[in-house]
Image (cartoon, rainbow, N blue to C red; front, side, top):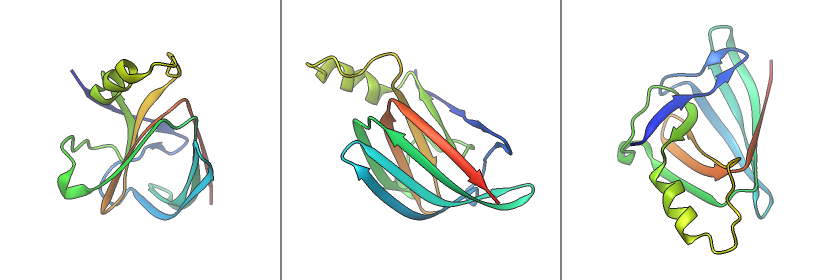
Length: 124
């Protein structure tokens, strides 16, 4: 059974529809994606960049069509059905125990990414 879990940042778990404002998406390499924007924290808006590496799955969907509806704006999907399907299709054994199913919810769009690593950098 799928369960969402927020990722702890130095400002706590980011929550709410207005928790993340996305300004830019960059493909650094074929399997490396960088998202840039602002986090709405208790201490005000903070600039961030979030880099995912070894990306094997990327999906964006308008928030009204998201079936999970978690409270957190950034987190993991534990027991992910997407991960189970990808592992079945993985004839080259690329996906190991380090891969995670991430989600990022902005005001209008939800991003789902299966990647090996993520690096979140926050500045003022």
